[in-house]
Length: 471
Image (cartoon, rainbow, N blue to C red; front, side, top):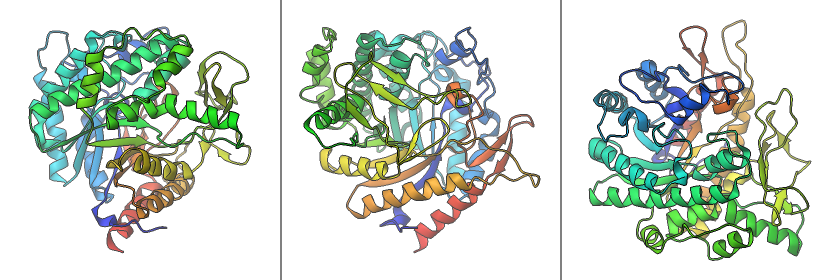
């Protein structure tokens, strides 16, 4: 176990997201979201919903108390837009505001610092699953954020505008497993990514007007450099394109206030019509950058020069029947490669702890050593409760130990790491993977009133935090 420099000053916590944990999908005036629409449609072939999820809506005090008793001093959660604005009329649902104020009250009670994301995939139904294709969503998102800033103010010390615009957009427009379920729709994928970044800047503009003491950021999916298994000019070129298209555009716009210099030419060469780009948007992005960056770190991207196939993204959401390995192909530029020497989890995701170190070094060297939070890091598993009623998730502990050692190494080398969040606080709805894929530090017995049972990893994390604070 490596000691973090200034480990006593780090924020140590875990993370959730509204749609994945709250449940109460129609309670207290909440409107529906695009995920409510999806899981209740014939597109949801598994028939699994998050109508109850792990019922955080009715268990939030228990969950935050357990989190605090586990040594954690911060909690990442998200606000449901449709719980605040149920309808497209600008009228605030006071019951929704009261719920989140109660969550913040309990955080204060247990001395837990909130880190709150304003949009974690769950656009309101009235915005629509294709909402980010439309420019008007930019203003509607900024208006929603502005109201949240006004309501919650400095009660929330860390705001994040959007969770993983890169991953969410790819799932929605390349894989087609997230709403609006488009497959290989590159033109709209690029427009959606662009609109997300303009909306991020516009929300930050509204945030700055209020002169809050709080800080604002955005959450990226995996900032580590793409890796290659051969050092040739062709492989290096594939790596350059992958770095630009996976996350360089997001971090560049959010942190530096500009997109990568050769992004436009690259997209035009791919046949993308960029007529939706406006100079006033670029000015807005330049003038409204983030205070911090969140990075959700699970695995690296391994690429090689393009050989065949259409532009697509592959994920494995059914490990019982599929051997598919995750990866993105961009026709003409690059495609996934496989390192046969590394471990893979049952969903085909590579376990490569050094990618966490690489991500932090990149943010240090290329993005002005901006303050960073590891906003998600975790390990999905199939789990069972033993005859003693306990869950021994030693495999998760080993995963976390390896990654945390690399995060500590990066911090020792000057990376501006401010906090760390395990995904997830408790077992929850894992999008289209349903409930079988478990990430939580706390087990949820979905068949028994969502009873909470701490796992071995919960106690391990408590002891890890104590060690970091006291050495």
